[in-house]
Length: 235
Image (cartoon, rainbow, N blue to C red; front, top):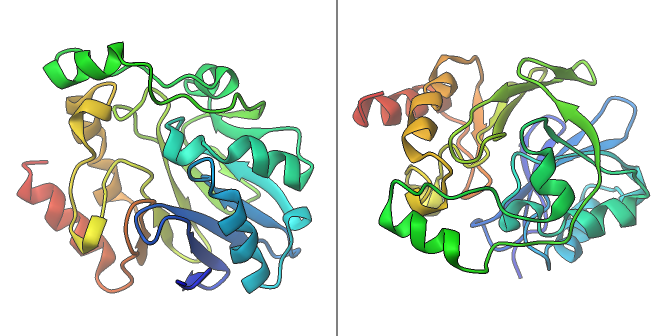
């Protein structure tokens, strides 16, 4: 059995829900409540509950759920976690809300053959989930969590910076599978070239630690690592 909760920074944790390959992030607010970022695949809620218990929390302590985007490995467990926490819904970018509320995946990039194939396959759905708040670029949640709209992977994809701890959460703009930085799979993107273009924002932000939904976090030379990856790709 893996560790149910890994501390990333002060008040910030990641819950591995499919090993390090799919993480849910948890932020403990000053009042003791919890904000979750992404809810993994459909079976992830049980792991999220274990992660909460490991940091001395309960689903009832979750007061906000933010989705970076509406792919099933990020939103698949959202409806169940919303129910467990007794919330009215999740927060997501305004351009992502229609997909979250209908449980349908965003469009694939049909400039790619693989994207056209995936677009026609009946895959990627998840349980429709109510949206409590539609977020916009630059918005600050709870005076701590800054929203950065980085479209391309999906129309309403966001990255987030927890400003008190200096933690960047990349969403799917950049992966760190097996501690190797890569772009997300192009066929899963709505616009794979736009994803690469908007990811440059992640090199310009201020942070000390970078946390990935896919892969382990980096807490040493994090910003330099991300900037190095972007530079190596010509961005």
